[in-house]
Amino acid sequence: MAARSPKPARIDRDAFVAQARALVGEFSLTKASLTAGAVGAAIETDAGRIYTGINLDLACGIGFCAEHSAVAEMLKFRETVVRRMVAVNAERIVAPCGRCREMLVQVDPRNLDCEVLMPDGDSATIRELLPKAWLEQLLVQKRA
Image (cartoon, rainbow, N blue to C red; front, side, top):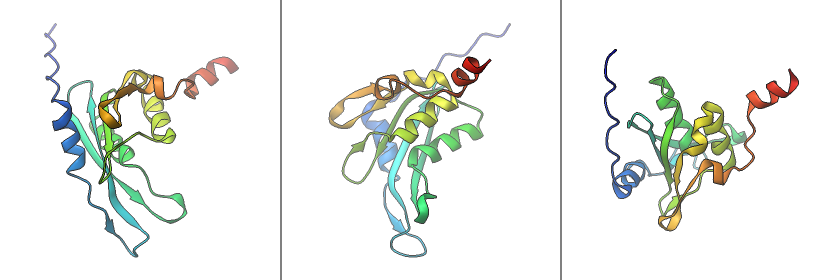
């Protein structure tokens, strides 16, 4: 049996936040009210890889958060477990919305233990931010 390679060391908080911040720069699309890039996100997977994304703000609510595009990038590489995440706008770190919190849990329930960087140097787990996550597998188990 081959030995597992160790997980890469985590980059420090400031360098991690800087990866998300480097993506921020809102720009207009077909008209001024349709924009992208106001928020940037970075996620670090359990394997130590970092994936990034930006938000898309469109009419009728069909856009998505920066966390969604970072998760989609991660999934392209068949990873599901997030070790740490951050989202930022032009002014500060922003907490993930409820939709993003639920998305992470539904991608992989182990993401309940993901560290979320918060404003003012704080952090919390998804479990703390979403104490009663809606999990499809629990609903299916209760029906069986």
